[in-house]
Image (cartoon, rainbow, N blue to C red; front, side, top):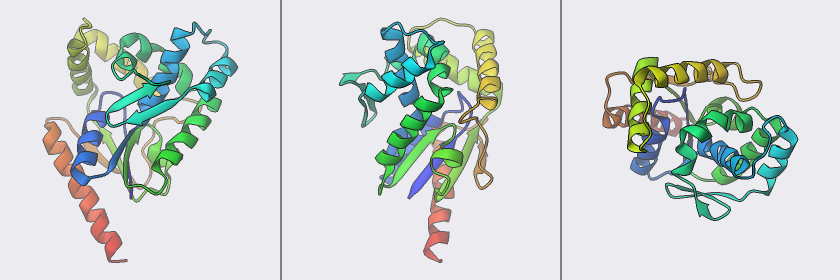
Length: 221
């Protein structure tokens, strides 16, 4: 069974998807981390972002592995490095590159082949796994998402104001909605979950209930 969780930046997708997968005994796939890893590799190699062919060629040479909660880039654990503001600012060059996206979609489908999987990102239910058994669109108000993102940055030792983070998220929302490939949009058959005022555990409880109901429906068919 494949469960897709899509939604805007800062909605808490990674946290709840990881927790949901653990609760269900499923594997967890963080697709956003894969695009971040490509962007990080481009930064390390000093690639010019206006040369998309070079970034696509680099992506095809990289060895990107998801091991537990860690993401390995050519054998190196980059789980923390890919979450920096510097990487966030340039990840769009990987995410908007059709050839990079095509390559990573193939990798994502290969990872999920014949496995029970909770996968999260921006286009999982619409593009990568359009036939997924259960699709969820996780969202929250911009201010709520900015507060969560600010807490993450504080934990990483980065100093920003709430207004700065909110401005960044609003800009990211506009970019995500207008991307030429893999734009952010809820699948027609996705269940939308608004998480304002909910704890992580409450959100996971809600998602588990949605999944269990879908499993029960499938068992009756």
